[in-house]
Image (tube, rainbow, N blue to C red; front, side, top):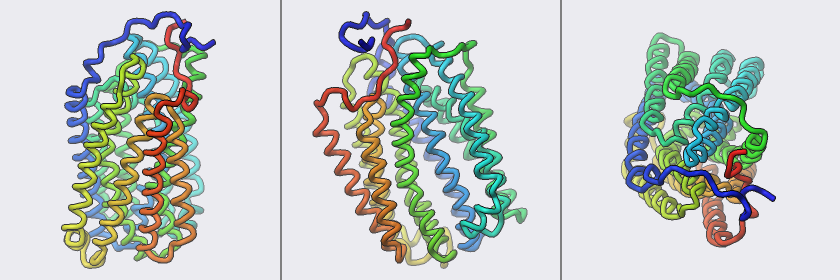
Length: 441
């Protein structure tokens, strides 16, 4: 019989829920939202500058490097969420040394994964350049060199997230942006083009890794208990499922367009996707704040439905505002920021923003359930990614059709996730991943 069942011994004393109160989360979430807005604003400003300084074809190459980095994000954010959840649980139990043990164990594995990605991206650089019709293979090698730093820093961010240290977490995002933008602008202006922009990416990974190490001091850590490692590995599966679905949905269209459309058309679509995805990334602060708070409340046996409703209200309002702005000034912003080569695509931005809004709402619901250990909705999100990819591969004749494919797929996804939340709400925990033991051995 599991220690989580009714016959389990009494749980150790847990922290009070003041840190997960609505007021505290609103304050921490606001700080995080502001920092992530600044960080994303800097990143978008950089991309707008690259769009003006580069031809559409060269801009498509630069955006491909960002897209490949976002593909690897599936692993980085998986490690972050795993570290965040288990840190949150041990914070609720007043056993922070256990969280340090898990973080150290995860960092060792993250370093190995990072080296693997470095080899996968960097060694066959010439092959990737041919496959994706890029001008040079060098950016692939440069991007690969930064992968170990990028993967390892995610664990430290997860520890900060799990301990609700949103101010420190916010600092890491600002540092990442500042280094990326500063290095990329200098090198691109010096004539290094796409390679210079990619060096900026890699430099930002190293800077973030250093910042995270300084902000997450730990006690001497041993090895986690075998039972806890088993629960951690079991929980990793659904997290990876969620994030693979996210990556497919967020980046599949860009890869399809880059592969099948001519370079100029691909560059114009990349600009639409870049700005349209701001809806998702600007709302990520709500998920970041919600995830550990729900995990702590779930561990303490407290209700957390109000947090979900509050998160949906915040994200829904933000998404509506972004869509409205895209409709009112989208075309003028494109022409002003990127030049006449990007004129007349504002209508695509509105549709893209709506599709991204639907996905963002669905993702928030899925992340909420995953923070409590429920995994069914993560599989639904992955199915939504498969549906979108299928539609993209079947009907990709024009950029307009590509966007419509996503609108259809994301509408179906949101309805499915919402229906699952309502229909399975009172079902026993057959859809939940095992949680870590409620008591220490």
